[in-house]
Length: 97
Image 1 (spheres, rainbow, N blue to C red):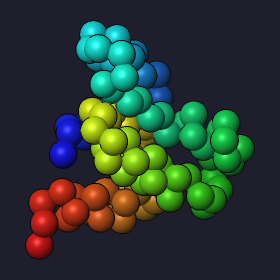
Image 2: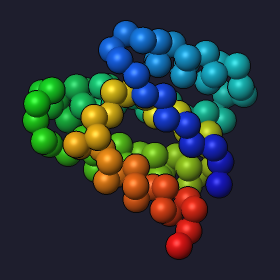
Image 3: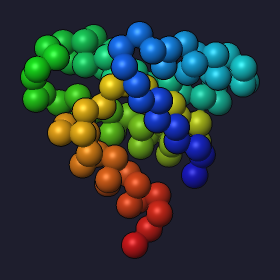
Image 4: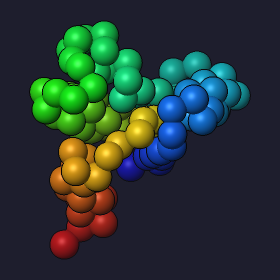
C-alpha cells in the first residue's frame, strides 16, 4: 500500500501549502492531495456545523487513491468528534487484526 499522510492543523497553518509542495516535488500522477475544506465546501456544499457526508466522501476518496497506488495526502482540521471513527477504521485496515 502506498503511503497515507494526514496533515492536521489549525486553519491557515500551511497544510495545503505543504501538500502541494510535496505533490509538485514528485512525478505527476504519483501524489493525490485531498483537502477536507475543499470536499466539504465544493462538492458537498456543507456548512461548518453540519453533520453531512464529508466523512464518508473523504474516506471513499482516500481508499480510492490508495487503491490505485497513489501516495495520498489528506489535509484538514479533523475534529475528533466527527473524524475519529474514520481514522480508526483506516488504521485498523492498514495494520490488520
